[in-house]
Image (cartoon, rainbow, N blue to C red; front, side):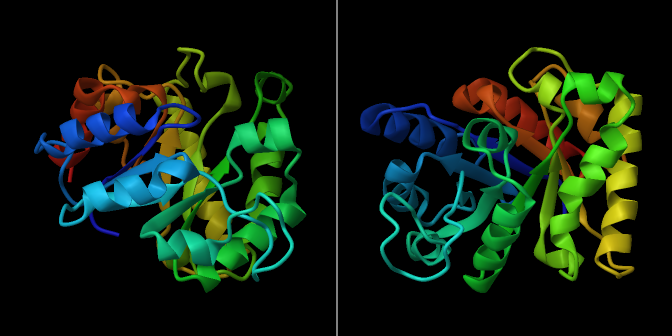
Length: 248
């Protein structure tokens, strides 16, 4: 994957009119409207964004996917094939908020990964430790366990996003040294787990903002950013995308 990848995760925010206005404003900004930028919108607005993004270089991403691979009696679920059908390119899998609020474990996430790959999409596996796990010195074990779902998969098929849970939406950001070390470890562990010497794309997430993006994206082991709250503001998101483009 060439260049630094930036994916904006809108989470559970927006309404039809506001979402249309936001994406149109983003597309009018050349810092955002370029290759290497994606937007993960709530599922109900994915068709709306697909229409808006048509003809642009910005890609569409989903925030979640069903663990079930085939159509059937799974009320409320959205399959990977359906996400592909509405133009998605990336799918977030295992975001900490899904793990925390919906109890998703490695068995569920493995199913989701395989379904996303079978649909020809790119899963973005989110991993990260809590503050207690970091302070108790078990954070490396936590991340390695979360990465175990990648066993046997080719590195080029998956993007990994490191999001320390204690830095998501808190305003806290891991130090550059912590980010660099963890991303290097993740890449090394992935290659061991996947039994490959190919490269793997790793993103950093966790209070990425306009004023810290360039420093974070300058780290050699960081291949891009998964952006939360700042992706809901055109100027903030544009500054992050500009920083990523500058460092290509």
